[in-house]
Image (cartoon, rainbow, N blue to C red):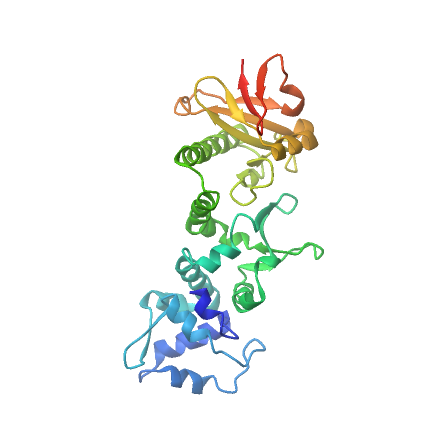
Length: 323
């Protein structure tokens, strides 16, 4: 879809689509592309005078349908959203992201390599360099709809994904990003199972942390970040205790069955060394996760605490097996 839309100069804005969709909904006579062109001729909307890609985009995401004889009709699900521009903007953006879930260019931009998590601002971010020049129209569209906005620190060349849309992004887009990561890395079925085990263990630890910190004022900031930032060196950001006001527990989750063992990458070791006592390994026995009283094995400052007297280290990227 984006490959076809790259040729257009401008893909629209909330104000443009609000006006267009209201006109289509109220029109007594059917509208064609020519009606749209004539209606917006010589208009200036959000400092823009060219609207060449707006109708093609609306058609591509299913917001409008165009009949064989060129008649435009508005998707009936958008009619209730015409009550105000903000509501319509949210609905339009949802339709856009759903339409792009399997788009190749979209996943070249929003891939695990380009997405990361800002631990200071507690926000998901995407590299500005991910948007090549030919995708500038799409980038501007996401900015116009406030899905993206510049990083608060102007020295950081990244866009922030609006937290308002994070839950929707996690539900509708992240599963495909994760699936493609597995494909790109050419994981065999065994590694794919390990990926699934890892995600289940992360969800278990997240629930464990939320129970441990149930009365914390900022409990919502305890979250899994591994899907956004594969190079972080940890999976979950949390708090040490109820008195913590800033994220100060960084958790790497490992899943195992039987004897505690895990694979520890060079990057994870380096981050553990850097974080010191703020870094924890949570070892989760996947055979015990359904046991209500089960608590994972927690190792604080594993860079120092993983000792040769207690663990066997197999040099690869280090596989660690408890004696």
